[in-house]
Amino acid sequence: MHPVPKVDPGFLAQHRDLARRLVGLEPFPVQLDAGQRLLGRVIAEMETGEGKTLAAALPLVVYGQRGGAWLATANDYLARRDADLLAPLFAAHGLSVGCIQAEQPAAERQRAYRCPVVYGTLREFGFDHLKDCLLARQRGVPVDQLPDRLQSRPEYLLLDEADSLLIDEATTPLVISLPGQPPGVAETALLHLADRLARELEPGVEFVRQPPWGTYRLTSTGRRSVLASAWPPEVARFTTDEIHTAIERALYCHRELARDVHYVVDRGKVQIVDEGTGRIGVDRQWQAGLHQAVECREGVPLSGPTRPAARITLQEFVRQFPRLAGLTGTARECAAELRGVYRLEVQPIPTRLPSRRVLRPARVCRDERDKLAEICAWVREGVSAGRAVLVGTRTVEASERVSEALRAAGLPHELLNALSPEREAEIIARAGEPGQVTVATNMAGRGTDIRLGAGVSAAGGLLVVGTELHSSARIDRQLAGRCARQGDPGEFRQLLAPGDSILVAGLGAERAARLQRAAGLLSERLFRGAQQRVERRSRQERVALLLAEQTRQLQHQTLGLNPQLDLLDER
Image 1: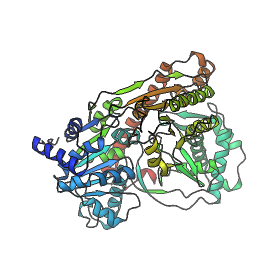
Image 2: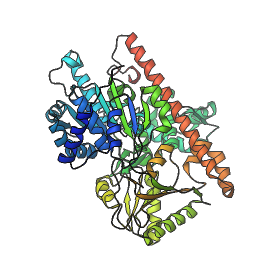
Image 3: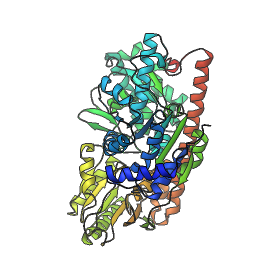
Image 4: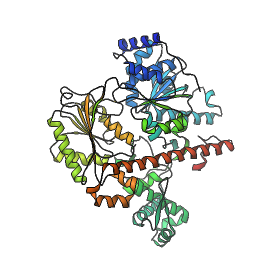
């Protein structure tokens, strides 16, 4: 373990004075407390609006002066915003600040990485690491001896929204892929055959779901049905095993991936949606033919399957940094996992002012129609009182349904989801104005505060409505955290209904269907129990991923191979 640097009171006073004069923001004692804790292996849990951006400046200055520090934040916009905001403060401490952005030229990236303080996204940091590894392999030299490498990696990495990066996105590997040719006539015929049979085969009889990964396997009955079905002549070139694999992949596509939940179709392309943030994953593609299976299902032009050239998991990447810390508003639920996997201790930071957030008991509706009516009633009530209202939804599809119900009720509103990311900053900037109604997926201003307009505080503050439980209680708490920032008033209300997807995910389709028929007997406790089951299964999957990754790396090391570049699994 590396010793934690000590910060003397004189330095803290100087830092506070410089921030006040140069940035116009004087750190509160709780922000300085958080900043000092972040010098160690700590996740500082700070409530929404408590000033994580300014709290992060202190450890970045300390480690920037000791050889360099990176901060990974949620998206390019926030990275640029925070780097520009704090640049005068870093300069006063003798530090330049760089900012990594998507589509940035290599020369500009190199200059940014040479700065002692660097802002960017973990995705960009990880991909640039892989690019350097590939270039070093091509040149036949170690990465640290590559003269034109992109990165000069420091010891210290600070993660903003750490729970999202270390937990929600931990199972998504970063992969640099080489483009392949679009499917030919035979491959296209096989995709269409698999798609057709995936719609026709009977669950539980001809195929079964396999935990913990949720893959699908044809039974002997299913294999006989496949053999007895009509095949296009082009498929004759494939082996029976290849056909079965394609069908099992199509089954996963139909059973596990939902349009406007896991992906959207935009301008004739299938775009992956990050469930934790609600944002589109730019240039992301599912591997091993799954992306083409989804494209076939949706009837859009088929893209070429990519061939992986380099990969690294976020777990593996962040564990390479000797000094690691993080900030978030929601970490206590996953404290044990953060401690076990990353050796990070979660430490709650007290709020500057007492919280005035009102948390109402959840209301269980009879059905989806009843839920939409209740949403409209609550929105109308909030608008009539002069409050601002934020309606949080789990998926793009749900946000569209709520928007349609509000339009039918004559309630003007803004819609923010993965199909409108370019308007996020503009919509969130107005979301706290009196009478303003915003319907949003999980992307609802994460990393930005909804500031209350004139008179909203006196009317009761921001009213936040949750329309169903998410796969993690942390994400529900993030939504509730949109209101009542910095001592403002605010209120959170939660709606539940028998058709909510958390019941199917947690209890299974059959039991969820029975419960829907007994809607009057449902309680909030049942929904919370289903959510806990989903959380437990997700933890098990992340542990299995970690063990599988460790086994994979050990196999590579035994063979004298590079686990990031020699991708045996994909050959």
